[in-house]
Length: 221
Ligand code: DX5
Ligand code: ZN
Image (cartoon, rainbow, N blue to C red; front, side, top):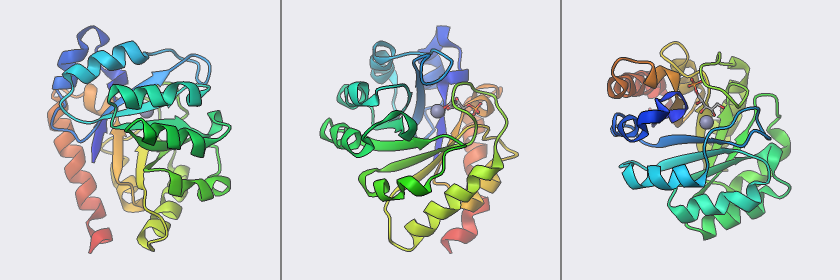
């Protein structure tokens, strides 16, 4: 699955930018509060408007403090997937329960430098694990390949039937990096600049999806 991140889109033409990627699987929307990360993007008001025009499921990535207070509202508004950071939550499983009760899928995000081991026991409470491959906050950064060890660890548990969760990767995904991520076992690839800096965003989605499918083909044999 490919999830274009609108962070690199033209915010003066958001509806057009969303329509330009309606061949993608999810629309990735980065919510930043200038507290959890040193950047400020958009919140529930803009998400509500985007939900009116999006034809594909919305994947909300909350880079905010106090996700327990805000995350369920995004699910209530109609976001398909609501992902918050493990570093920001006191009780991640309780937030996941509230997201699911509000009708959303629950996602847990983890920064590049955060070890997954202490949180493995939480994963059965989640539908998606978003592994950050750049420091959260900005688009257009360089992919950090070391995070693929986390992808491999979770992929192993999923393949062994010990866990049922989608593995998503976010940050620095482009034609040069997507194959390594696919080989490690990623299910869903977020791509911001690689899609929106392309002359034809829909074509970039098609090409990234094909590259990922080829690179991961041997995993599903
Ligand atoms: C970064 C965001 C990403 C970002 C990805 O904090 O979570 O979704 O938009 O952008 P690229 O693909 O350019 O790294
Ligand atoms: Zn994101």
